[in-house]
Image 1 (tube, helix red, strand yellow):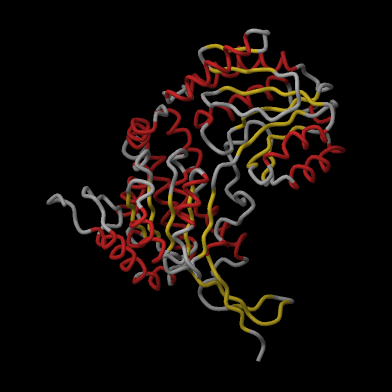
Image 2 (tube, rainbow, N blue to C red):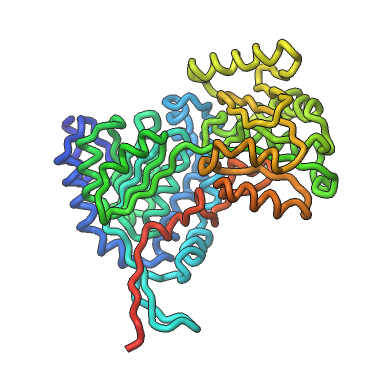
Length: 447
C-alpha cells in the first residue's frame, strides 16, 4: 500500500492503489454492514436532498466536476469527452430531489416505507420495507452513467453499497463519491468503490458471500460466473447481453407528427449515443414496405444529414480494432450491390430479407423490410428474452399488435426513435423495478 492510501474499510471512495485481497473485501463489507442501521434511519427526503445537491453542483460547477470527469473517462473508454459529458448531463439533470423522492414513492408506495410498517386504506394489516444490509453492484464499464445510478438507487433503497467498477471505466464512480464526501458528507459512509480484474473468483466470492443483494452488469458469461458465487438467501439480479431495434410501421396516421427529418435524426442519435455499445443501442430498423418513406430515402437522410449533424456535438470515439474491422467488412460486402450508404460519420446498410441483422457497432445500422408484423415476430424468435428496447412508430390501430407480439418475445421497453438511449427516470429496467428488487417487506396482520 502506498503511504497516502488509508485502509480500504475506512475509505468510502475506494481509492486503493494496491492489489486487493479477500480479507480487504471482507473488512470493507463488514464496515458497510455495520453502518446499515444508520443509513436505514435517514429519511428519503434527506437522501434525495443530498444526492440532488451533488448532481446540481456537477452541472453548475461543471469545470470542476463534470468536465474533468468526462475528459478522464474518455481517456480510458475510447469515447470522446463530448459523448461522456452528454451522457452524464442527461442523467444529472434528472437527479433532482423531487424526482428521487418520486421514484421511491412510485416503486415502494410510500415516501418513507422504511421507518415503521404502515396501514393503507382498503388493505388489512400493515406493511413496511426492510433494506438490504449490503448491496454489491458489479459494473461493466460500457455506459459510464450507470455508476451514478447505482449509487443513487442503493442509497434510496437504504442499502450500503460496495460498488465494483470495471478497469475500463473506474473514473465516474470514484469522482461522484468524492463529490458526495464534500457536498453531502452524511451519505459518504455508505458507499465504497473498489476495482479489480473481472474473473477474480476469490474476490468475487468474498464480496458475494457478504452481500444480501448482488446486482451485476456485463456479458452473459460474466453474469453467470458472478451468479455462481451467490448462495441463498442472497438475491441476485443480472443484466446481461440484450439487443435493441426500431420499427417503422405501414400507413400514415402514425406519422402525422413525425417527418422523415424527425425519424432520421432520432435514429441517428440512438445510434450515436455510446457509439452503439449499449444494450439500448439499435442494431437494425424494420421498415414496412408500405411505410411513408422508402428505405433508400431513410438511409440517405440518416447518412447525409442526421449523422453528420449529431457528430457535431457527439463526435465518434475510437473504434476497437475488431469493431473497426467488422464495420469495414460489412460496408464492403454491401457495396457490391449498392445497399450501403456511408461516410466518415457512420453507415446504413439496406437489406431485402426480413431478418434481424446485428450491427458491429461504430454507428452502423441496418434497414430491414417487412410486410406484416408476423414476419418481424418470426425473425425475432431466436432473440427471445434477449430484447431490451424497441423504437416503435406505428398507428394506434396496430399498436396493440406490436406491443403484445414483441412483449411475448421478451421486449420490455417501448419508446420512439430519439429516446432509445434516453430512458425515463421513473421506469423499470429490463422488466424489473430498480428499487423494489433491493428491499424485502414485513407484513403485520391485524391482531
